[in-house]
Image 1 (cartoon, helix red, strand yellow):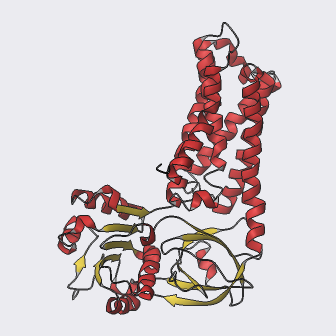
Image 2 (cartoon, one colour):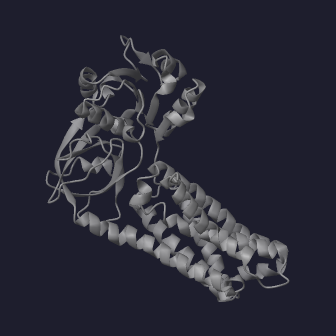
Image 3 (cartoon, helix red, strand yellow):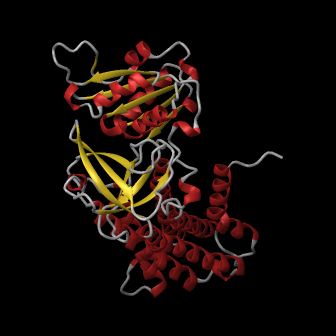
Length: 438
């Protein structure tokens, strides 16, 4: 009997959790004589809250989830499904008002009953949560402040919505529905407990310390860490981890970075970091011996999960990091699989790890194509941005058999994906790393 893939099992479980309230609505008998719009409003409210509440799962970084799905996919799903959940929650009162305009009086929080005030508060919290997440950069809300606000709003909206539902007690009078909505918050609270308590406790037992910080080209540097009192972790080239650089793993400031070192060497672990003006500018000031906490590895981006007769690596700037880990790992393994590496940078002097790439070219079956946005007058290589013509010139005849790994700025990734598809590269052969927290 053929086994169901883990990805399918997780998707089925998640779908059942989201749809469970609606299934109970369809199966269990409800109050008689209810208008269609009112029943539809209740169904959308249940679906919206279950979808919003279950967002605790994809962002909890559970090992069983984070090592099955791409991290960028999990966070993209989290963002989009939260917006969908907000729309469903918003449609719940709108349909009630359409069905019976007299219910608009419930918006007056001074005179409305507590269950209605809780509903208004839940919708307001949901709107604020979604808007501050979608427009965080536009309103210049720092990541750490946003994350704290995000957690407070998430817990607040769930608490207010549950109070509203249990006090209203129409469909909640069905025993199966009531039991389900008791189980839901227990699961959600468990996810919060895992994120903010269990995971930091596990990290506390496996600290790392800074060995050295090595300056690199392109305003980048290598952060080299060593495990303290434990053997370290095993990872696949292309994976990533969250780093907490403060004195405690319970600190809210943590950021994701891809591994840059070879997966075959675990005595030290390297991360390549570009100075972008935020906390990355502070990292290079940390002294050797400073304690660092790591949560990982996560992700499925990498050659170990996608064996192929050849690979095409495409990077922009510091997007080289996971690809560098793959090349270093291949060198340590003596892997001679053909690799074509397209590397886009502003100038020749800004190419991070330029000398090491040249050295790897003598060890690996590697062809590197540098593409410079602002080349010098005597530059004879590729110019501008990585486009269809550049790819077409350097890809081999059996290009459709290769697997393609992309990492870099989002505009570059979207453009290169489009160019590859125009060159008839199968979509299944293209993998991109594009995670964003908010």
